Image 1 (cartoon, rainbow, N blue to C red):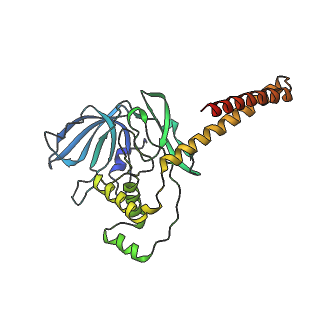
Image 2 (image 1 turned 120 degrees about the horizontal axis):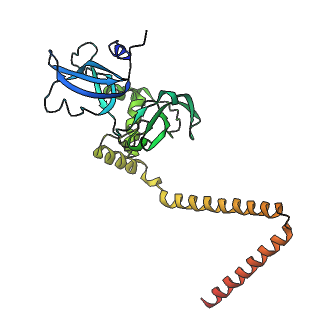
Image 3 (image 1 turned 180 degrees about the vertical axis):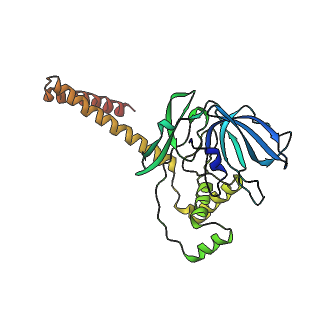
Length: 279
């Protein structure tokens, strides 16, 4: 017996996502909800939608490809098995389970993440993206380069979190997103899940930082420019070391090379000295 993934959508507590679905039609159901007609894996199904039928908006995604997820009640009573259709921003995007990998090391984070396979017109041979995000245009996404931070918080802070019905982690993540001015767009979603709460919240977070810690501020642009220059010089030194190895490997005399370089240095020193005297 083949597994019916759509039947799993009706199971309470199941977090199921059905990909590579095309929405064929949307009609009004008897109870006033939407009736979704979808095509998946060569077959068609009728599903109860989580929204109420609206002649102007219900059919806006007909003909598009996307995925099906269980509908969220948000305080409303929903029919059993109610679900929602979400369209892919890139309509050439398709899930490719054959490319799934259990774990892949996340760059710079020293962690492992579950990754799943995709393909699209821009990447026809497929690619992998972290589970939990839908890649954007051309399969783009921002990788998760977050670093782990362990912080003990006092009960007074925990109480403030409870006031707004959030965990300490949720509240701190929300503030981090505003202070860093993080944008999380559908065209290139972030694998770390960070975003911000709006322009006012970003301005208030920045104002708090300057008010509380502005006296310790440094010019990051200048520091990063110096670090970039130092990195480029280090690459040049490594390239010169490689040239030395190549020269020696081709049978050259290292002393002759050093003598030639020293002559160039002496000549450049004389030019610099003359320029200083005439300045």
